[in-house]
Image 1 (cartoon, rainbow, N blue to C red):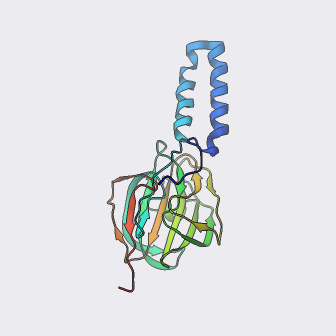
Image 2: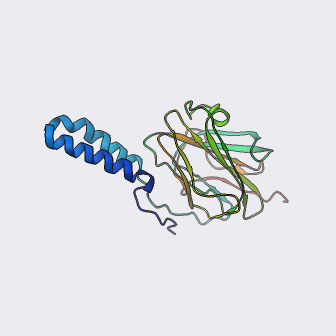
Image 3: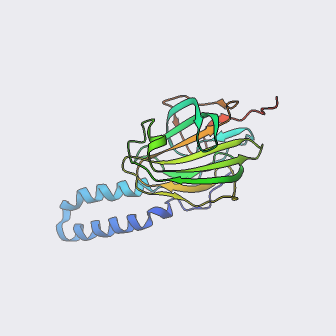
Amino acid sequence: MKNYPHPIIAREGWLFIVVSFVITGIVTYKWGVWSIPLWIISLFVLQFFRDPGRTVPDDEKAVLSPADGRIVVVEKTRDIYGERDALKISVFMNVFNVHSNRSPVDGKIEKVQYFPGKFVNADLDKASIENERNALVISASNGQMVTCVQVAGLIARRILCYVGKGDELTKGQRFGFIRFGSRVDVYLPLSAVPKVTVGEKVYATETILAELVDEQN
C-alpha cells in the first residue's frame, strides 16, 4: 500500500526551489542565454528535494531502508546509543538521492539523542562517530531494539527530525530530512539476518535491509 501523505516535492525544499527559480527567471529576462548555468542549478535543486511516495512491503519481520542510497557498511559493531553489540547497516546518500528519512520498523521511540560534530565525508566509517548526528532508539513491535541514526555529511548542514521520545512510528513513515549529502546508520540485534551487501543500491521503504529473528527461538 502507499504510505505517504506528503507532496512529491519535499516541503523542506519549497523555499530553496522558489528562490532559485525566481532568480533564474530574472537573469533569463535580462541576460538570456547567460542564465543557462542558473537553470542547471535550479533543476538540480528541484531534483534534490523530490520526495516520492513508496510502497511498504508486507513482511512483519522486515527492517526497511530508512533512506535512498548505497550500502557502505554491513558489520557487527558496538551500538553506543543502545549500549549493546549490534549488526550495523549503513546507507550513504549522495546529492542525487532522495533525502527524506523514513522509519525502518513499526515501534515506539524510547530515546532521541542529538550530537553536534564534524562534517567529514559521510562515506567514511568515522563519520558515524565524529559527524553531527541524531539517533532514534526504537522499541520495535516485536520488542527488539532498532537504532536509526541520521548522520550529516561533507556538505550537509541541517539534520531535521520531526519525532520525539514516546512517539509511535509505522514502517515507511517519514520522520526527518537531511539537506545535501549524508548517511543513515541502522543498528539491529545480532540475531538479525542481513538482506543487502556492501555496494548495493537501496530505496527508502521499498528495500528490505534485514529481517528480525525471534531471539527466543
